Length: 272
Image (tube, rainbow, N blue to C red; front, side):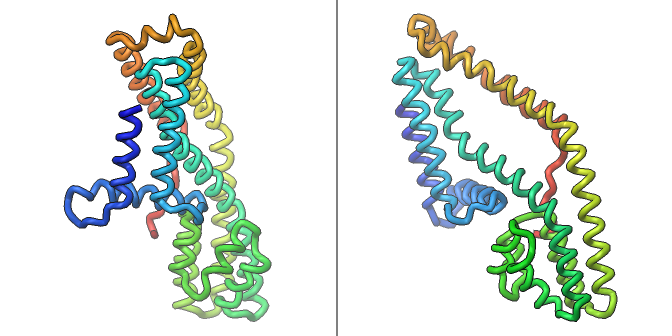
């Protein structure tokens, strides 16, 4: 419990400190990473500080609950770490689902924009209409962006969206009669890219799911053992702590290795 409280206080200090010295550099990097994760997941109502506090609270509650059940501090600390990571894992899963959803609807949005340009509207008017009649997942972002493509990029926080927006920026600056053909070519490229990536993700999903099941199984068994006091108390010894540390290290290493082999590379925001 003391370690969990100290960890939580450390996160609070990292999140709220605004000093520009070297000692707070890691805190600012942590805050930046939390902000990027929230934006990529489409969560705009939660600040990075609130996320860090939620992680600390989740870890503390998980550790406290397991400690009440097992009365074994090392086991409680292990589950406190799992609980602290749970909100981050949920956000990463939501960010992956959002990227797939946006990748599926971007071709439709570009088709609507090409139709608007072909009907005689300007590029700015076509973009404004996407906020009313575009794909549902993109409407809110286009309603908020106004005339700023940079603001739209920040709101969407999507690698495919970055490419589309930069293409629109070039089209707006160059202009000419090739705008409609450029938009149709972009729509075709995005549709083919989304189809290919979807097929590959469907084929390798069993590898990722198998890795998650393999990592979760021993910890579920350990949680069940927490209800047997005469068994779980053995983990309070030096040997038990060593077993927990080795097991945690092997689980993390094996999971990252399996996911790294089986998962497709996540698209990066190179045009951010």
